[in-house]
Length: 150
Image (tube, rainbow, N blue to C red; front, top):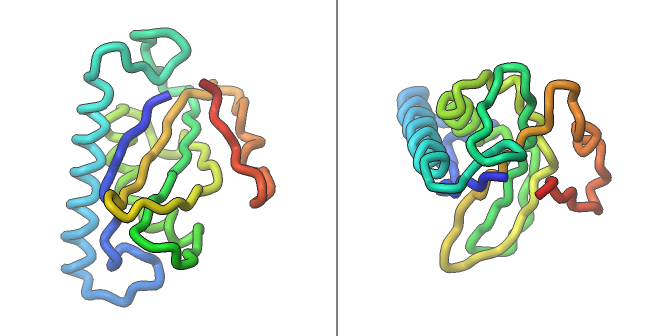
């Protein structure tokens, strides 16, 4: 499993935001670039692998489990659906760094936490195979927090 730590997305990337298209476009490009470079940096670290074995080659028919863990400065309630939607351009950047199509991502329910000193989004990634093993995690109840395979 690989964890990519990203800054919180700009508010204008929320599906509910009503911002100017140029502002939104600039924020989307910035989010894509940051996610791409952070993913490349994590993947180049020694001993890091998405597969079950070190240095395992990724193939285009593999699916990837993706779970976002959100850490905010305060404990206000947030809509998990909008949080995931605001990460669209980050997922595109991560997929580009992995050289895969982001349609292979199987999204797990978002986990929302609290960290006053370092707000961020941690994106956990792991391979789950081409047959869709682990895809049932998307059907987990909101009260349960799925744990990815280690």
